Length: 82
Image 1 (cartoon, rainbow, N blue to C red):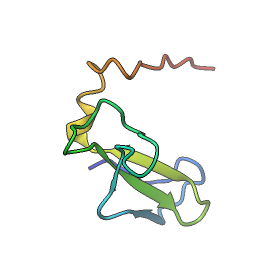
Image 2 (cartoon, rainbow, N blue to C red; image 1 turned 135 degrees about the vertical axis):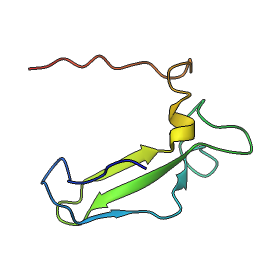
Image 3 (cartoon, rainbow, N blue to C red; image 1 turned 180 degrees about the vertical axis):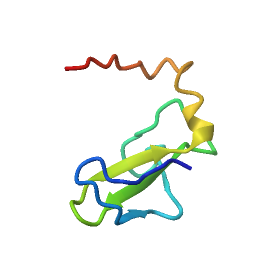
């Protein structure tokens, strides 16, 4: 489980996480997590919403995050510091 608090936008600790999570497989919507799940077992993410400012973040389950580095569908983002 990720450390969700505090909100990176406003600093609030009044955060809410969807209990069941959402499938990111695109069966009824866009495939948000291509290559990270399986046909019958899609990758899942858990939305977390800040009740004060409304910032919404998505956290993918750990068992699917480990596939990121070897997936051809994802590329690492290079971060530059100001």
